Image (cartoon, rainbow, N blue to C red; front, side, top):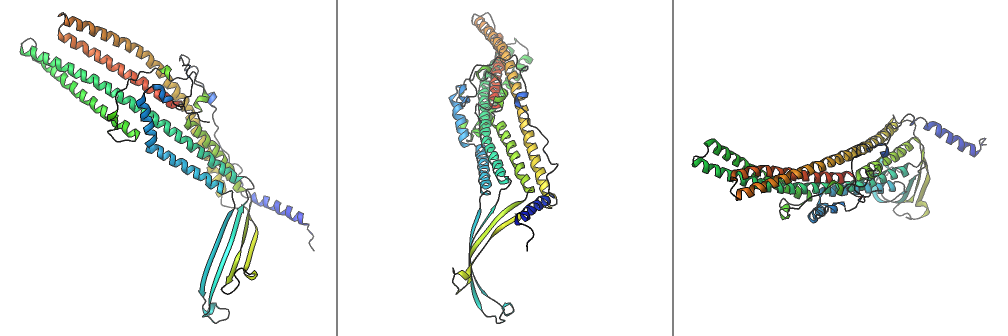
Length: 476
């Protein structure tokens, strides 16, 4: 006679399971870091003197604000053929496959097996001690198993995989933004190289004329030999500088072609473009923390923090008991028996209880690793956030300074050109000698070089700011 009611036996079993499961515990394992709030990273005082543009921000096609059809085509071609983006796409595909795998782990596992075995047993293995007998065994079975998700671990693992997949999709946007910015920067460098080569060519021509005039003076006994040699040395230096600028053009062109994913000659079909842009053309009206938070890499980092948090939840469920439902049915018979007859049929069904009691610390190590992954993800997010706001502030301050410097450089360039016009007119009137004209041209070319480089720096900072603000790509 059973003196224990069935309900009490079940309750006692559950209590025993909970007590035993306490042998493997996650107690004392926690994360360390905390996520920063972007709104706490203020830059109002640093940017207090900056006049922002009323332009809307972000803009999806922000590169078109430069009004440069060649640049738009370069970026379009680069995004279509870049191996870097192909790699980012492949990583996103792999992450999406992980989501499918995590989803599949939540589903039942069903398998069907069939076999046909022909055998002959030895005499010692034959119960009748005869041997020589042949038999054919036919087996077919259908099996199913389903691990219950009692504590939500499988769901959490799927959500973690989904978060990582979303982060990988944003990695694609970040890669596109980085490539677009690098192409724009390389295009700016090529245009700058073209302009500097033109200035160097003019300077080489100027010094060549000076050396010819000095040769005539020397041969006519109007100047000493050292002045002629000095003029020749300056001419040779100018010719070498001109050759160097030609090399710089080719190098800049090849770099641009490589970034676009084309052959080295691709850049030779391009034409110099006028790029004169101010800081106000690309500055948004304000620099709120929410805008920084839309950067693809920052959003991806935030998704990875959430994915790591879900993975911690999934890892913790390994400390709890779980149940696996297993069922199998089929037929097994020797040749000659009815294949589907009742004597050949079999089935078994029942639950399997998994109970973590002692594993040498493996589960605790897995949880500690998941906690560390979360701390790493948070630290990476915090680092991105701090550096993003710091870099943006630095770039804006530099843009403000460059704008002020350009005002002075443009004024100096105007004065140099005005002086050049005056000296040229006096030379034509026979008042000034040709050497005075050529000497003043040296100051004029130096001023032109400085202004070209100043405009290139401003363009480069504009491109950098667009990249730092997320390229106008709205991410949620």
